[in-house]
Image (cartoon, rainbow, N blue to C red; front, side):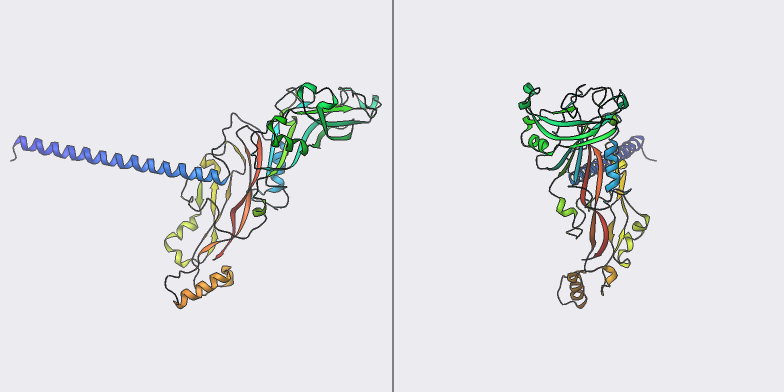
Length: 387
């Protein structure tokens, strides 16, 4: 029988070994968690870069996008956000801005600080909602009015001709109601060139004889007394220089920024795709699902549409001989033949990769709570082939 002292010593050693083992397990567990979090953070940061952002916008409260921007998104994109026709949209970015002045007069000021200096302004529009006349037009001798939009050049001279510049002017029926759109591209380009030029806009309403129109007869929604959906809005159509790429579906590589992200939360491959992971050689080159879920990534708070999209991915072998169903390039065909004949050492079989890429559209809130519609190139694998 072992002495009590020896039994105690053995028990102490076992206890210390167990504690050390538990400590090692905890250290390993926390290390894996930290490494996993680092990978996730790096992946999300890379994905933000793909979408042209440094950080995800922070949205305060529940915001509703302007109906015009929602309708525009539905015009250019399908239910998954994929571009219906790259020629529908002028440029690749549409930005909307609400008036910051909130004046009871027909004066407006828009903050354009979120527009990058590298963006080319193609068209700028002022959207104003014309309200129903408070005085019936039947009892008014005026059937039309002259509505003019001016760029303010000097806030101290806004009441004299030299203090404003005419941008747009046209006749509008007095009894009408609904949205009126005025082109003000010239003013916005001057604001982008010199920030200090942005002193706002002034709208005047006159009779055909040139006198001031009664405010009860012709009114536009403005200030804080009208519903948000009818507030004055500036809409910019811009291009950030990637427009040419959006019109070319020829592959120049893999989908940018997505090649290393399938194992990141928010990226889901199909069960069918996972089944083939252990036996890829038996599967010829084909397109498989890869769903990007913005809600799981944590972006549902600022992205309006879509909630996610199917990026797809290409997987499978390109065995000799390459059939036309594998959509091989001439170079891939030659490479496949050289590999089969073993004419040169180190020549692998061609790779399965996207041979057609499509753009997607995002409708989202930026950091200043403006709603932006942006088109991103080469985000969906349209088809796969051997390259």
